[in-house]
Amino acid sequence: ISAGRSHSHFKLKCQARLCEMWTAFCTEEVCEGSTDPERSFVLGWPTTNCVANFRSAEQKETWLSFLQSRIREEKEKDYPKSIPLKIIAKDVGTCAYSKTLSVTNVDTANDVILMALQQLGVNGSEKDYKLWVISGREDAPYPLIGHEYPFGIKMSHIRDAMPHGSKHCACPRQLQGSFLTEQLPQELQCQFVLKPSRLAVCQQLNDLSQKSFKRKRSIINWAFWRGPGAHLDNAPLSSTSAAPGKLFGLLLTAICEDDNLPKPLLDMLSLLYQEGPSTEGIFRRSGSAKTCKELKEKLDSGAEVDLACESIFVTASLFKDFLRNIPGSILSSQLCDKWVSVMDQGNNEEKIKSIQRLIEQLPRANVVLLRYIFGVLHGIEMRSEENQMNAFNLAICIAPSLLWPPVSSTPDIESEFTKKISSLVQFLTENCCRIFGEEITSLF
Image (spheres, rainbow, N blue to C red):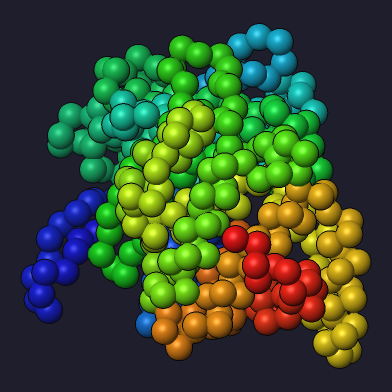
């Protein structure tokens, strides 16, 4: 994997074995900025996830088909095809313990979670838990999204412990005995930790999907870079539990006293309302990932942060991150099917009435924040000639942060869902005054 310096010169960035690579379509889970799902997919290898962007849908499909075919071919050559994998359970039940599973080279992280839950005798599904990796290669633990291959991650670490001449061969004889246990140097060890996702721990809402974990983020146009590592709930490795933050990953009803938005949220919204309309590419362009990470940790700790001193793109990225971490989404994944069907209504008046009926079913705190959000989007749309962000462009960028399905589905279904929700958010933006009332234009 390399970065192009010119048409004929490349700089080597990384070497990855095809049998250890994976592809997926959860671009929103990996990339901070907005991407077109028709022209992109997730490409990863131990221990990185990136989004690959292409010039056309046809080019994307060609590369995706080619890579998936080659990955399957190389996996057929794998030896061994299964290994024992130790899973350490934390905050699962009343104590910390572990189980060793037999994992194959085609088992995903979600598959391993289900196997572990079965072995541990714990009820639940893969959406209630996260599999974290503690690697000597990384500064901090990080969560797997679900599509990655733990087998490939473990074998990558084991191969790194091989003598130089044998680590690149397909079937090194040394891949047995102690190399398949934890008897490796500290810097080459790789541990897998099963922890409840924050929603399951803090809210016990097992019927809602959520995105409350921190992520590695990368976006590539055939030039790769690695995002900053994510922390295991910001806790030291020895900790058996992690305290939730004070802002991100919590239900709005938990942080909105008497349905009033907390000050950090109001600060973000106020800045977006003031500066967004005059900022080209607002919500489309991403802020510094490093700065966003640092500010998020400060905000989550309850520290005072002067966002006015930061780039407005950082504020926009932080705000989208906050929305993506609301358990079950601000529009409620439980109402997902009803929201999707809104745009199938006959005329605009029927759509507006359907939307208002759905809004009445949301918690009051969610409605309060929605009014502020669409007040901001309305102000930006009114000056779209200046900022190049009309209702359609705004919807493409922010819709995935407002609603997502309660369960994962196929790429085709997810793509169709994204289109429908984007159309819904565009309609909400264009008709926000009729839906929420004219007063949303003077909330600030």
